[in-house]
Image (cartoon, helix red, strand yellow):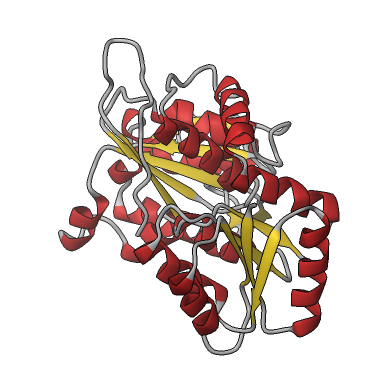
Length: 321
């Protein structure tokens, strides 16, 4: 019989989940704290742990980290009260199988638990998930996990930084994230930072008004205006000049832009996916890239290894900080 450990410092929630899961045929044990849960895990084996994220003492994320250190294969489902995108992304980055938001949808709970505990269903879902990424070749168990991660990350508004050598399919990954996002019906606008002359970059990103410089014969929308309510993909982000980095940081912080030559500030709502073939940590140390901009971009970092052959092969892995 499948054994599940439920961890929550609220007795009513522990009792509710135990009753629900026992009716579904699971063997259930409950713990009022993260420390108690770790003791139970040392004493017996479980097929799944379900833990609240906000608890006194050891919280759910700390419990997740402790479990993954000693029992990396044990799936952990996180419960979050307010569907915080930051909490969800952090949980996924640290190895959570999935997360469930309060108030609960009983069918959702059943579905997530079934996915986490049923290998047969996981295999079927893996084939289905792989079919969702026809442009990305990969059938390994590791790739399936990564496809799942893309799907979970995609539905959050978190910015993504993709690492990889030229030609490894970073834009394909960015397109996949956009296609599975909540703004998939909106624009996906790519721009290659290294392909645009320095003197034109500000105009390309933020737009300009007529007469703002020689050759500006009319108003022009920039990347962020075109991608408003959608996704902007900034390839080779490490090539941006310090001045443009500062202006980009303002976009991320304030969600607003000012076209070249204009006095009007415009609000924008854009999810940014950036990519680089440089090691930005080294660029930061050398003073060529802003550290505060880096952390704004790299909420979720992904790494794409070199292509396996002439056809773009996105056999990539995740590297989280």
